[in-house]
Image (cartoon, rainbow, N blue to C red):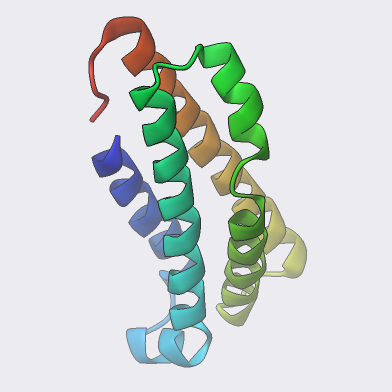
Length: 124
């Protein structure tokens, strides 16, 4: 599970900043974006670990998980949209991409918790 999320965030980073040289990305808020992404990721990881450790019922976990890490998510969303716009996307395109990334990340994490609880296997 941790490996999957550690893989997911660089994909998000690449998707948002792939067309701009590294030096330009730094001046366009890459550090703030990376900090926000790491904060959001860390919060989600901690929440999923708790759900795995307590072997929480997946349906109950999904309810609580949907409400977890909201301040970190909001910060990530703001920084990711700003970063994407600084790299040439429109606000609407940036928001759609970021919202999709957030939804996909949450879906993957919830599925990892459910897989662990139902099979006992730690997702990779």
